[in-house]
Image (tube, rainbow, N blue to C red; front, side, top):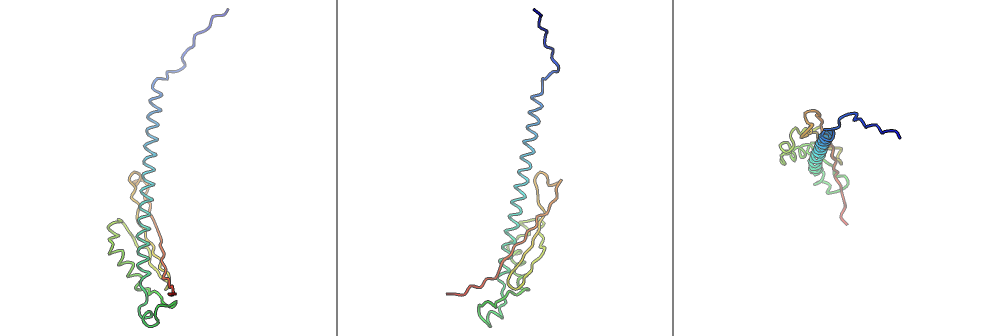
Length: 151
């Protein structure tokens, strides 16, 4: 019978579990930071969309009153383009949207007489990666003057 040889340790593995644990903690912290930033960006964009939608609805209520009083409520009732812009801007001012959303910029307010289109933008404020990534959220909202004859 041949005597068995001793097993020789190739390397010392002490501390490798600690290294894996530290790596796992770093990966978990990065995942939490990314999830937090994505959630913040989503909520800020949603808030911006809500403000744009409300401004478009306010603009869609700015009908041409001269035509309305002359012809009554009919398919020919149109929006007054000058009043649309001022009504949408007045709504943004009245609701303190510029205070609630820092850096709010009105990219455009337009009307074709029936539809109102409001475009807003705002820089995203990300809690963790905001210094690295400077992105701007841009949204558009549309509202329509809808005539429905009474039955």
